[in-house]
Image 1: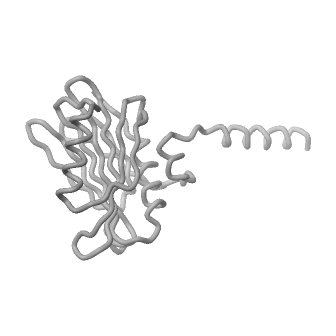
Image 2: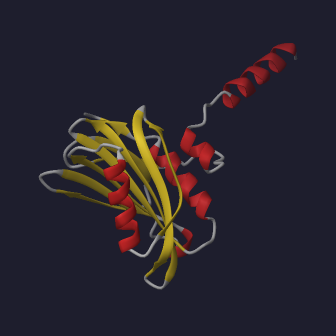
Image 3: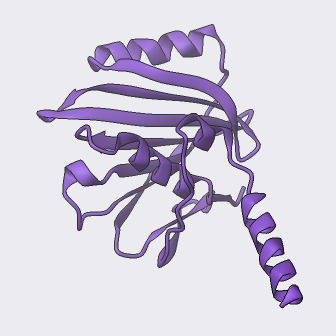
Length: 185
């Protein structure tokens, strides 16, 4: 019986030692274990993304970027989210010009920035932000991250959320998927 108690305590310690990322702390995420995942590589083999196998996933590429779009099409639009991940060639510098351009784009789309910050994502310098507004007649939220991969490449992801229910929970689930990304370059 004593061996069982020590083993059980060890399991609890190991589980509780999982380090939360800064992003998951920002949104007070509770980690959910997503199951039945399928791995997708972008066309240019820059990264791999794991998403539930039942989700509809499409890929796109051009000379300078490669993207994976995915969503749970079995749920209503106001109960799920659309995840767009992208690896692009180009420079990103988190300076005043970058922030002005980002704010200008947000205003042009009639959105309001509600949360933002800088952090590290996958050990990369990262800027993230959340906007809200209206899109296609629905209340709309978008969570974005831009991570500098190198001097000439960056990774970005956007999460489109329609409706006002469980917004943070949907952001948290997308963060859990994003934190499983494997960069191949």
